[in-house]
Amino acid sequence: MNSDITIRDVAEATGFSVNTVSRALNEKPDVSAETKRVILESVGKLGYRPNKHAPALRGTKTQTIGVIVADISNPFFAAVVKGVEQAARQRNWSIILGNTDEKYEKEEEVIRTMLAERVDGLLLAPTQTNKGTIMDLKASGFPFVLLGRHFDDLDTDYVVTDDVQGGFLATEHLISLGRERIAMINGPLHISSAKERFQGYKKALEHYGIRLDRSIVKGGAITTDDGYEISKALLNHEPCLTGIFAYSDFVAFGAMRAIREAGLNIPDDIAIIGYDDVEFSSCLEVPLTTIEIPEQKLGSNAVSILDERIRDRKKDALRSILEVKLIIRASTTQMPHYPMQRISTGR
Image (cartoon, rainbow, N blue to C red):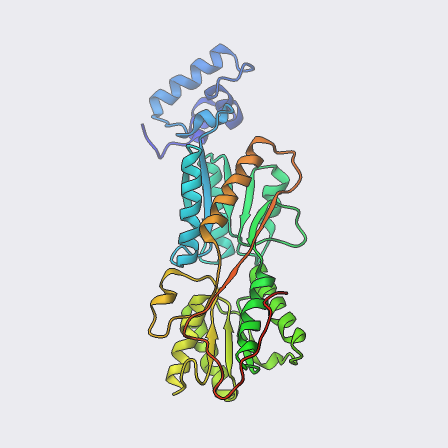
């Protein structure tokens, strides 16, 4: 069989439309026996190979789901995928993994590929720079669940963590240590998790009577290099910082490098807290205080919701919001000569 031959080639060779060829190959009753004979004869001569998931065209499920993440090299997404894979295996599902590198064009491309593979449903962490793909999926009725991110103005299934709570806990912890000049190095604000972590940061400052200074709030950080460059510039202009809350552990790693290069000590001069609790955050020379996300539970809950959606496409939107947890390590300690405050953790 020749994988280069397409259904369009068969249509051109026989003089029938692509739709007629497709219906003949899928044994639709409205195609005459003679038409089927001609088409099948041409298929044999050309060496056309139908889609390997052709049974799905007749309504049979492929027992395969697509999983699309923003950055598979990030241990956070790797842990989420592990949770997805374990839950999928329990349902005898296979997964196909795709990666967007936070690029909308790749999101479009990967979704097209997944649909061509006849997956039964999709789990995806959207780039959120454009919601066109999500609106198209929603309009088509195809089963999908958003993973770790959501759109405020779209009624979709999703599984996320309580990022407002996480932002509050991180900022409150630094305040409790006497760190009141607290910068936030955030992700891009079009990403829902970045927007909500910033909301938590603002809530904590307001709750404890600290004025929000937007000059020490920087956005757009995704990678370790982003964290380094933004922190380096920030430290050049803001020498009195006492704390940094980073959008993710990866961003925090870059910030830690910039702090060391500036000749400052972590945590005596600047305490720093990350987000995600990726596996090696505890293995650094100065172990990183962070907000723990239950990544594998996030993945498994998404599979459960997708399972429900595949079985009942008319259900109201299904949502799961998971709690997060503060993990205290050596990168955050009391400001020297500052009396310990008693703060009841909450929102």
